[in-house]
Length: 178
Image: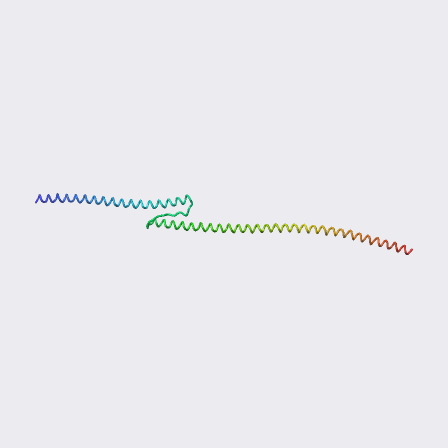
């Protein structure tokens, strides 16, 4: 029985060692597969982050907000890329709207400038007319003054003639009465 027990024990130990070695190999293989799987996930995440970072850097360098992140998948990073693209779309719409408003404002400013130039031109024309009228009024005042002076001289002449006529009448009366 001893030999059988010893042989059984040796066989059991051999089987245990074999099973232990198989267990270690399987554990090592599973650990290797897990490490490989983690490495692949990490590499995929890093690649997605790197592509997103590259797009952000290019936009920053070129100010081209028309660029978009092209992240594939259904994970959180692809969702971040989608939201980033949506944000860029909204920024692009805002910039486009601002440019439209700027063009409208430029057009309104040019229109106002044209109208202001027209008003200034009319002001100059009105100023020229006012100057012409002022000159005409001054000439009329000068003419009226000349007429007034001529009238004064004529009145003096008439008064002198009346005085001479009165003297002549007196002379004639005195001659006729003598």
